[in-house]
Length: 220
Ligand code: G3P
Image (cartoon, rainbow, N blue to C red; front, side, top):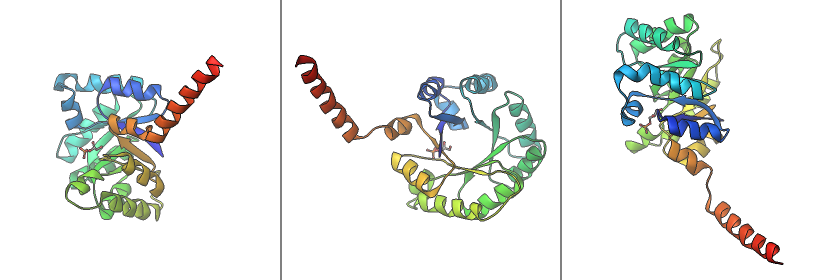
């Protein structure tokens, strides 16, 4: 499984890239708003992310009609070779994805919750599909179960083009672990979850005892 960072924060992206684990970035309008992003700087900000990241960078269209989504997608894809256009799973999104994919523009179909939505996203030409885990947990359903269903169903078919499943709306290291066990191609995670993924109390305890013993070695 590859790690993407789910953020628009350049410092977080640069830090994760320095760890050697960053394979891509996903952004959305909420994440851009969270860093105080302005509309007139949005496209430049995506370009800045693309310069840091050696991998796909998802930039979302906020349009609601197919023609507008396609226009957004063409503009976003022209910003950098690694831009992927994020498109919501809805009728207009499917139609736009079909057009963008036919032009060789990669689409990440987002806000995907069900098996039929995922199959339709793949059929329309999406290169990435983003099932949301945490949003199901928010309504007292088990998001990981839905993710597992989607991975299994998409894996049953050949769509004639590569389709990667991105476990999204990831809220914990456990979500990451379970997504990996289910065979998700990618997990896109907030920076604080990525940090949690590298930590364990036994690692800390082991390190403390190694350091203490090394002091003994130095003083022997
Ligand atoms: O990639 C989608 C993700 O940003 C949504 O996460 O935590 O807002 O449900 P969340």
